Amino acid sequence: MKKYTFTKKIDTRSGFGAGLAELGRTNENVVALCADLIGSLKMDEFIKENPEEVRASLGWLFYSFKGLMTAVLLSLIALIIAGVFMSSADSGYKSGVKFMERLQKGSGA
Image (cartoon, rainbow, N blue to C red; front, side, top):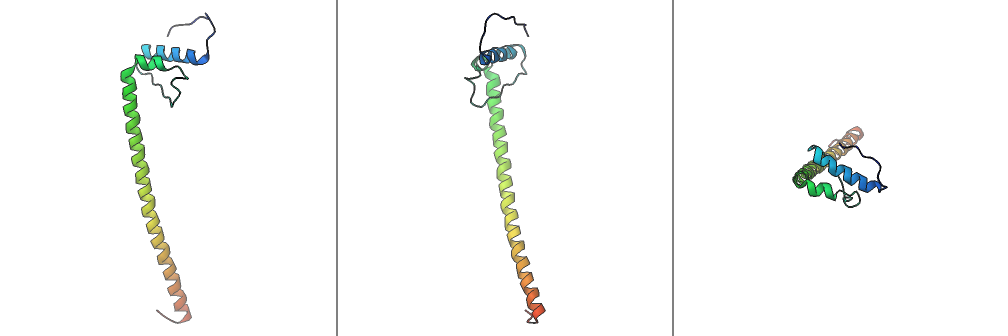
């Protein structure tokens, strides 16, 4: 990475964007994650110079999101099933307690 000497004052965001673009030019392993701050962080130059990497990242993000949603869906299904069993177990437990109370009173079944 080239060394910089002070030439003029610029805002931090512009420096970040310029540095990110330069890193993208010198290192193909650079990854930049951003929510909706691309404009604020001046990442446009990096995106313009690395379109393939951006497309690949979007694909990764999509599949990661898809995987996350699958995990959430499976978790919800597991919770619903557990709730059904817990409800059944609770119902069975209450029936058993009532049966035992009747036995203790001598009324039988």
